View 1 (cartoon, helix red, strand yellow):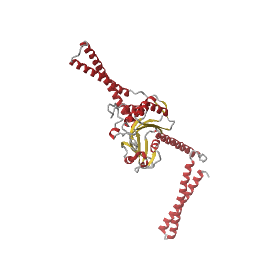
View 2: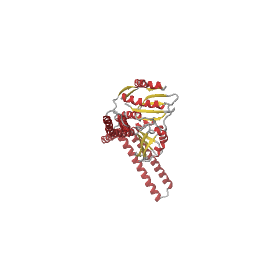
View 3: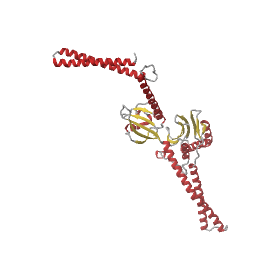
View 4: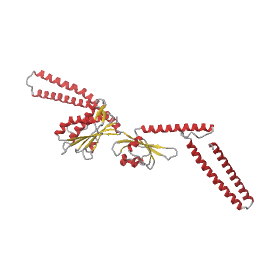
Length: 436
């Protein structure tokens, strides 16, 4: 039987039963008004009820048949025979459904390309959707916010955030993230919240370092413009003084004047050299990236630092995972950055009974991590929060340039430099580079 014939038979059956129910209802009304045949009325009412139940059964069967018909209209089922008019309507319906599916797939693909982690959650903290960035961030399927280990103790922050709220938060790894909450409404569902989590450490570092670099460049320019004529003038005055005295023994006043001119010249030249060092930081070249075999690279670093390690009796080790790891970076800049981190570690373990320094380089999904670990006394909290500030130093006579250069190199490669306490004491400087 065709679908049209089945529909016609169903309609006739329902119409016949509806007519019977109508007739029975009329008969019951007439008998109730004109006679006292209560038994007959009861029988007619019972028949009417049975017919109604039968109609409900037919309607339920029709609903199931309609569901099966809808399923049969899928793109893989083409054997359903339809009348020409209905076939055209079904064809348009199929095309619309295919277009909607394409739009849905496109929207999902677009959400998966967003760097921000997107989560749709209800008021109880149940997660109904996560994009690719959120799934990578959570590392495993989750049903509730509390199950995301990366949130640490701040899962309650996301659960209680109201639509429109904006926060800068630090989760389990201590990295600053920007969290935004907005309303999310889906047809036929209760109102939910869309939470967007964006890592901002690299962007903030780049902005901060650019500000310091611009300031250093301006200061270097202005200071050099002032110091150069001072140094030149002091040297000229020295010559004039020698010419005026004609080689005779200088008086006390003349000796004092000569000493003052020499001090002015010496200090001016020293300041000019000092400014030139800062200018070198501000004018760090763009990285010329090329493949680097990490094991060979570390062997070269160890050769350069071996004398220092031997003289100070420092145990030095390296660890590369995987052993054949390669890095796409500027070898000269990376060498300078790693040497600066190692020199910082050498100073950190100066008073340690059994000094140790290690370099660990690992490949990860997000890129490559270069870590320099030491077993020194570590960094106090007030120092750790400032140690990466350009030109900050706790060393007597230090310039604060070494770590600043390493941070510049990391940012120039699109990465960042972080510092944290080591699990067994000391400090860990972590230079994170993005995947090639």
